[in-house]
Image (cartoon, rainbow, N blue to C red; front, side, top):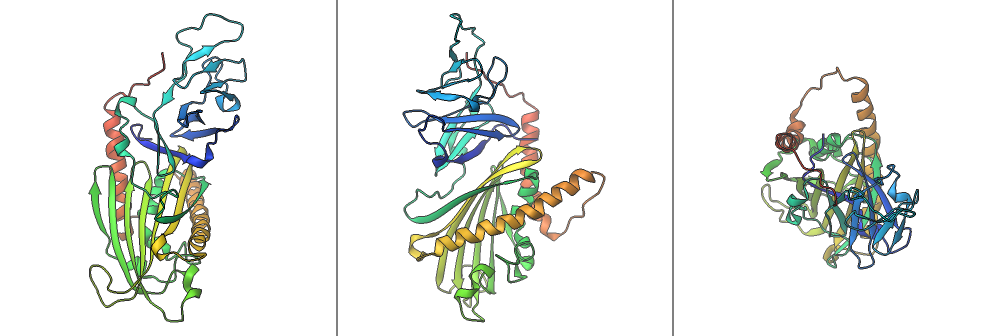
Length: 352
């Protein structure tokens, strides 16, 4: 169900402080994970199960660079090895907890769920984080009770902007008539298209006179497991019918979205949107933040209802239409990696 040799987003870096009780519990690809920050600033990710009676380690406490289980007091170092058992001098060699490679990049925390020997940081997707001084990026997150494959299909088919987001991003049916260019990449799909001579997105139409038209540029990189990086630009409507707009650039923005499957029925969605400093203005990126929060609630409502229907009616066949080309390509990439991993056994490496 889940690709293991992959970097999964575990949240924003600001969610892990140096506080004694600053411990995060996550479920990633159906595995319970606990994360905490060491005094030197590094992040530890380990299985959220004590090796004694499988108590949840996120209910424990930090001690230096270690974490102590508060069921019977066993203490584990950042390498997962038990270093103390209250009331017992001998520590069994098997008293350890699995740990995972962790990388912080672009203000996201990434955890590698598969073979540690294959944990290549260069495989982490490009993104623009709130720490980039050239962009005014606002961050947020939401939980969606739907399978992550539905999120892949949703993000690879932006024709739904017309309908699902009719009160936020829509305002035109031009999204349904676009010829999108999809190019396969080593771990995903890149999609590019223009929407020309259309009104501004609904959330921004009040800023312009009636009849104002724009050219919209979408440049999307989608990568495993479910990372969506959108470079979105808005230009005043030009005369060009192919290639870049010859209008005036009025918005240069990035929306970076990492969707992490918790299990078969839910995801944690970490996302952002913001303008370049060059095209920003007072309140502009704040408006983008408000709009994307509202839009993702629209997505959540649709996807959760869809997920429930699919679970209840497994015998119902779905009919493909023209807008399924993008989702089909990305889901093909997912299946390819799942089959490759199924053909080889991924070792579960325990600290020893």
